[in-house]
Length: 184
Image (cartoon, rainbow, N blue to C red; front, side, top):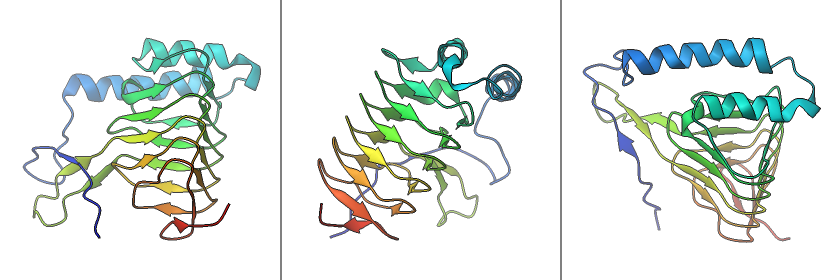
């Protein structure tokens, strides 16, 4: 059975036309500078400083999540993190669409959460985005790749270097390319 992923398609005349307004593009540019000059060099104990700047740029942060200084967040206003959620070293949160990490969820080093793709059956190849949700106490292993529109259930484990193309159920363990169920 094929899983239907809910994706938002943007109206673009061509693949080269930006779906973002000029204001949004300027904010993204400013965000990149702020993270580079005020956050990327900071030691781990300055997490509150990094969270401050994420909040300034519209991230929805609850409790005390952790964002590693070498994590990359594309568009902070599309990021929601709950208490003790963690974006690890070198994690890439490609937040063209929403990403939400619930309490105690961990995204390990160099994992890639990709909310964007393109509609390949349309000649203009418009951007499509889908929300990624990582449930409470879920763990995403190092260098895993999570596709747009995917939900990782509470307590689920995604093995290192896995490519997740379908939702992962609560308490499930998946690994591989494409990710498939494994025994605990």
